[in-house]
Image: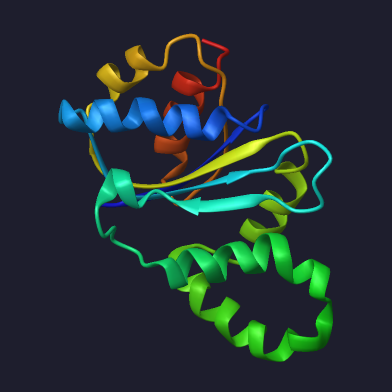
Length: 163
């Protein structure tokens, strides 16, 4: 089973640093990163920089068009306004099949802002205790996922920096 999670970091570099650590864990076969993308929003910038982690996952499960559409809906469409609203509504509806709905988009818009970063992660198998150990002391906030409430609660407990 694949899981899509979105992690927020309180620095513009946090998501990229976490991705470097995940690459090492993947080489050790402790996590299966099927796809990943980062959003980094430097202080003083009007919009964030987005990047698909092609180096980490090869071709990736999802393609650049998916990430482009998702990041466009979250970060760039609000700047354009309602001019393309109807067309985007249809695309947005098709994303809802994957747990990406208006609430998902709104929560990320509300939480990922100037001076922060986010890691969008599609994972398969995870050796949770080993990954948890590798991220001990790191602070990341799980802001959205398509996991069950129990799985999400476990992730929040393990990675929120409050353990």
